[in-house]
Length: 217
Image (cartoon, rainbow, N blue to C red):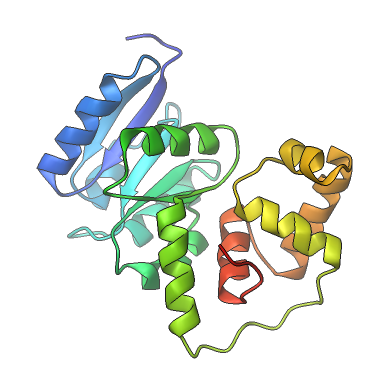
């Protein structure tokens, strides 16, 4: 196994799912499943501050300790740890809690391996990742919800444009190229968006945009 491989931890209580995903990931030339755990407490007992995994694929619903509490404790121990939630349809109520706990994105359990690779690549690059199928489902549920949107400072037209591109998964440089503005300007708009919406990270910002119907996909 190469030392420059992306080290992945799988945390899921379903053995068949975990074994299947492990097999697929280990067949990739630059990815290595370096850690497995069937629940959060086992994962935390194995988690090393000195040599943490590059990416953690974390199930939301697990016995003993669920993904929300596990993520929160892992982030407390290693603030820059990169965790992607493994989600099933019907778990939308947990998304905000997972984002607040510190996940960098969400991946549906029925995703193709190319989607898993893309999620890993995006999060490794410092971005957030939401599968498009998941976003569609979240938006549909939000539209049916009678929940009152949160109050925030008014966003400018340009900030809304930048927000829309962020929700498409574009990097700051890609947004700059799309909107014909400088990357520094996009950096500033992103910082303003995080501040105005009280979002801790990009994943939080995307969910805020969906909840407040600021984007449509």
